[in-house]
Image (cartoon, rainbow, N blue to C red; front, side):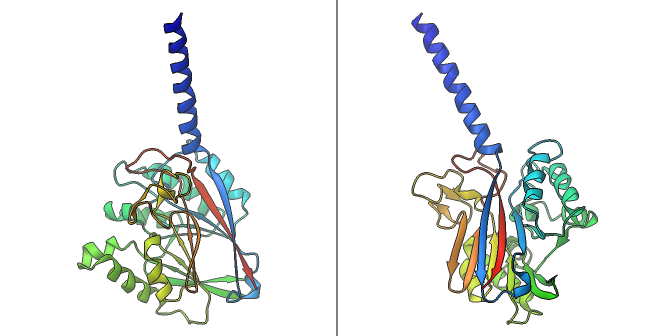
Length: 281
């Protein structure tokens, strides 16, 4: 009898543990953040941006319906993807393209590279362009809304310049930022898409107004009183893995992302989309 009881208890623990892990890695949360600034044109008051990040080729279901529903509920004016749409170890290209193709049918969609696209030799980029995704590679475009404009900038993941030109990652990031800002009037509100949050001092150095990043995966395992256990580029007990941060006059938003890479599980760190509402002071 005791053996049977222990067996049932063990089975129950396994079932509950499996259910918990499934929930932690497959239930998508929506994080709403409002950015208020006097630098934003009045016409952009209420402008809504949905940020997705670090999908890593994950399928939430065969047609990505759950994720699409979350995005649609936010009624975005703009959708941005801040890198690592695929995973260099297992690819996941089909799931990534399934999502992006449906998004471009209804919204303007912008993308910047992450390190996993670089590892795959950027072979995904022409496929994204073919379905209508607008790729920003160290450049800027004007965003028009209600007759006013702000600047949307995007830079490559710094591994691109490091590998191709032999630069340090920080030098590559500085070079990419300078290139992106070349045609931007300093008086214009600047929204930057950049995969890596650890370079926020460089973004602040260039006086970017708002930066959207990912890469940190929310610290993967979010223990109490920490910003996670580990993040690529920041190491153990990282400082910037999720939410909103300010450095000088630059505001940074870091998405926890949607998928996993080398470490296969999230704990206390569910996948998320970030909904940013811009408000003019």
